[in-house]
Length: 125
Image (cartoon, rainbow, N blue to C red; front, top):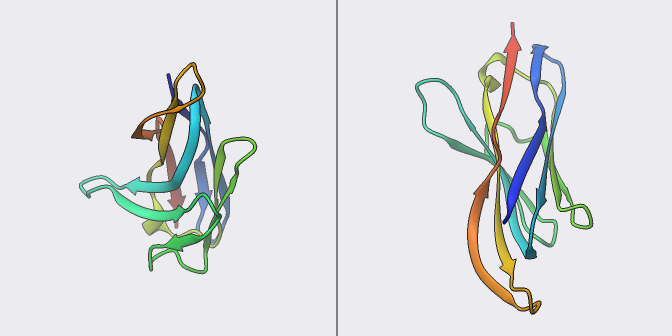
């Protein structure tokens, strides 16, 4: 099966930095878009940043210029570097990947969205 395992997160003061990582593992044919979402208490989950398989990123307006999404295709890993953090960035952060599975024969199987387990990011003022 396929799974995403996150690392990183924690508590930081406003203006500080944190880095999140998320590695995919399993029987994978191809990883398409990879993304980071966040959900603050009482709010809906929102897209923070997305990166295509070719490395093209897009960001929510609220994080542009402060956050950087990147990926290492050889390691099936996506990163989120968060700088100049604000208290409003406090949320649980989830990675997401659209993954095409691989049959034992090596041919592509179905494509589904997978989620990491989430990581709390708390920014104190």
